[in-house]
Length: 161
Image: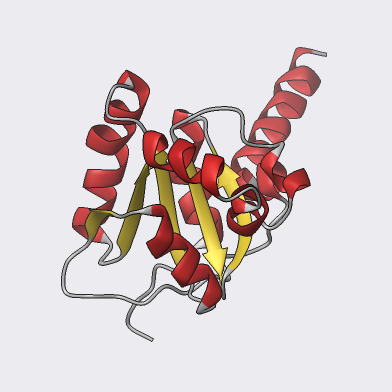
């Protein structure tokens, strides 16, 4: 009896580990290819830059953060900076205060940035990492522990192609 329980437990753990991103995000394999550069960087920009990237149908990464947020700083220092050392992508950073200013001026900002007002409902705080493909919001992740898995699940990281 103990062998059956042990074997069942082992099989369950194996299945969970082998399906990692597929379970959380429903994605079979990475499909988003970003432009590369010589060195990865986190580049803070204004909301107008993000709106232009959406309008130009660019594929890019966005980090919504606050300089006063300890979780944002932890994500940038412990996850994004090391990630960019080994992945030559640009991560665009958008300060939450700059978003609040433009939201007051442009009522459809959320629907432009998040694809629809419905998609914005998934966003409940920051830091928030977003992936855009050809100007369309694909998915976002706000939980620090899931960001590495999120990036691994969606991004094609083999840049040799």
